[in-house]
Image (tube, rainbow, N blue to C red; front, side, top):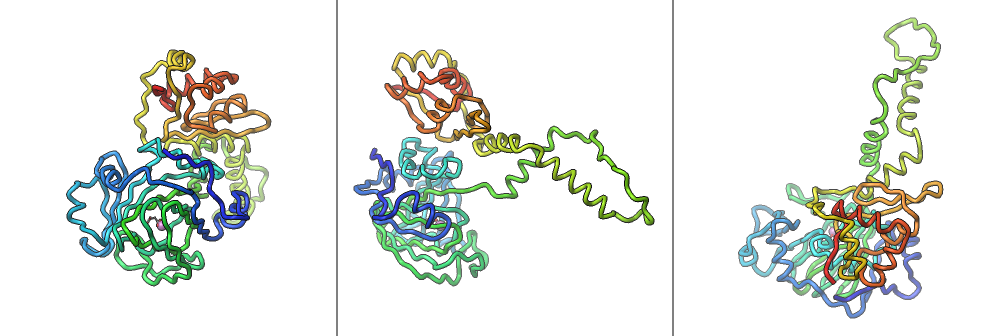
Length: 387
Ligand code: SIN
Ligand code: CO
């Protein structure tokens, strides 16, 4: 498997300049972002994954389906590929970084963006002429051409007022206004901020990876935080009434009362910055799906195997780690759980996802590392593998 530490930025660009000038602002085409790149997951294996029940796959059928741009959800029967024929469809397989944990190494070049923003690595396959139609997405995406060639047509401005085709399963732009065209080949990268119209038409049979980034929305955060913040409050704390003006009409909800009630809600929700931050750490690393975690292990004896150098240690690909500093205390988060840890230990755990031999010995030497690793093994968030 190849390894790329970073994007081969065009001259004068760097991760820092990319964030300042392009991220969430405008598209960027980076030819030869990964020199010498070779596709590690050929189309027939991708098709095989789409037939497996535990893999999230989708198919868009342009005109041969029951209606234009028909969306079908996997798993698929292998025979569908014979029926589909050689044009007019696209297959998408999501969460590849979790389904095939070895592929997560391909996310390394994007780790200048925080882990809590990453959504998944998705692959799409299309036969010549195939596409998922002109559309826009609500998230930031890097489109990594991995096999064959594709022509991307990109709109000039993000616009939410697109005319959409009526009655399709997915939103397809009816009147796309494209202003730029890029012909991409393996190793090329195209970054798109949310909202930009795009249409990628396969020139040859082709595979494109999407490295997608999401941020939690304000309503989602507000919902979660309201639950958390109000948990410790009970109905038995009554609203306190300072002296108020006797009312002429008992039906009036006075300005005074409204201010007091709004104030009580604001106080309930902003009771402490630290509490919010610590809830956020758990929320941003929380498990999104029901995971089949192996908790039937004895972390302490696995540590002995690790110390003997007979095994490697890895984080499960579907578990998020993060840390934050609050007033000099370092809090480490794993799968929605919080642990206070020495900063160097938390940083080491977040920096990599696999350790063996010397790197493993260095990790376990850090203060508190053996204890937290044993706990993470017990929780099923980390696992050992044979080396
Ligand atoms: C594709 O690769 O065609 C789908 C990815 C996208 O357009 O968002
Ligand atoms: Co898209």
